[in-house]
Length: 93
Image (cartoon, rainbow, N blue to C red):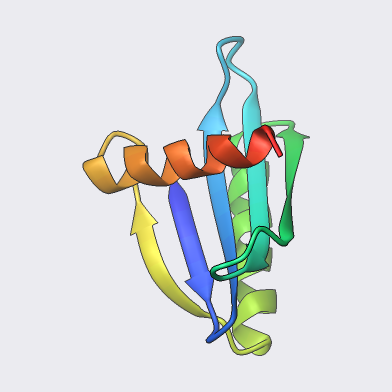
C-alpha cells in the first residue's frame, strides 16, 4: 500500500510492503515538493497489524499539521508502481 500526503510545499509518502523474507516494512519518505530536500526511513514491523497502526498514527499526525491525502493505492497498480519507483530513487541520494 502506498499513501501520499501533501501541503502546498511539502510531501510525505508511506509505503507498506513485505520484503522477500516475508517481513513487513514501513517506508516513509518526506521532503519539499520540487526540491531534493527530504529524507527516507525504513522501519521493520512485527506484523502487518503494526504497520497499519503506524499508518493510522501517520494519518492522524499529518492531518493535524494540515496535510491532505492525495494518493492511496496498492503496489500492484500502475500508480503504485510509479510511486515505488520514485521512492527507490531516494535510496540512492
